[in-house]
Image 1 (cartoon, rainbow, N blue to C red):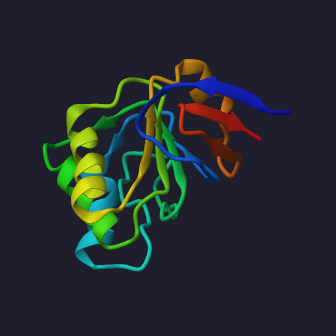
Image 2 (tube, rainbow, N blue to C red):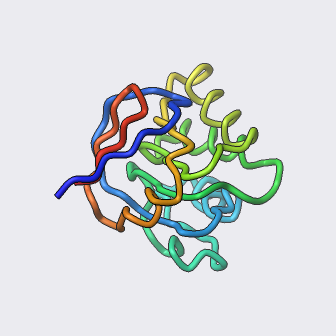
Length: 147
C-alpha cells in the first residue's frame, strides 16, 4: 500500500531511494562532521544524541526528519559533504526547513552542481508514516510517495 504526501519543493527533483528516519531534530554538524573531516567514502551518522540516526550510513539515502538543529555551521557542513560526493540523495522535512540547512543545500546546488533534493512542510503524519528502509519516490512538484 502506498501513501502520498505533498510538501513544498525547496530543491526540485524526480528521484527514488531508501529512507533513513529521524523522529527528532538532526544536528548537522554532529551527524556529518566526523565523516567530512576524514574525507570518508560514506557518511556514518556520528551524533550519539540522535538514537534514530547514530551509526547509520546516510550516503545516498533519503533522510526524513522534522527539522535540523545545532550550530551555524550546518549549511557549510551540508555543502562540504555534497562536494565530497557523500551527501544524502534528499532531505524530507515534516516541518519548515531552517535557513542554515536551506543555505547549505542551495549553495551546494548553485556552486557545486550537487543537488540534494529537498522538500519541506510534509507534516507530522508524514513523519509518523515513513519507516527506515522504505522506498520513497519524490516528484518535482513536492509529491512524496511512500511505497
